Length: 161
Image 1: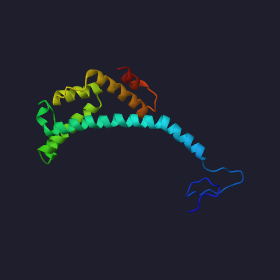
Image 2: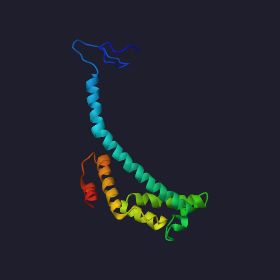
Image 3: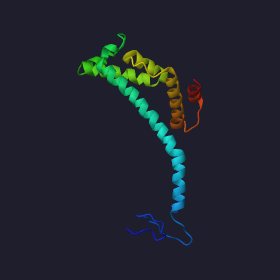
Image 4: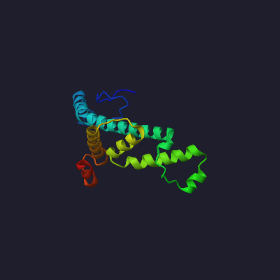
């Protein structure tokens, strides 16, 4: 395809110029837009992604550990009898218990995540101050993702705690 007749430098343009019409952006406008993107959106997106990856890592460790060492569960875990009857094998029942445990834990505070992980895996880390810093970062990320940058109601409580 030809370049736009308005010389906007964009291929595949379907621009139909009119008198006095200015189409597209100049290179200076694009550069200014990209500086704004790098200064604001890229930093925010990287921060959000970093916290999300760390959350996934923690829960993957838990899931793998619990699937490998199901005896590390307390013996009072309840499973619906119908789920037991419908499960094809023992591993399916363990997967169900692990899934429910990890899902329930995900909605708790990060401090609870790491206490649970420590009770099972005995890593000796992270330290309490590091958990607090992560909890603060996660609460900030949650405000950005779920509150569009505005802390309201329960999000304010999470930030204060």
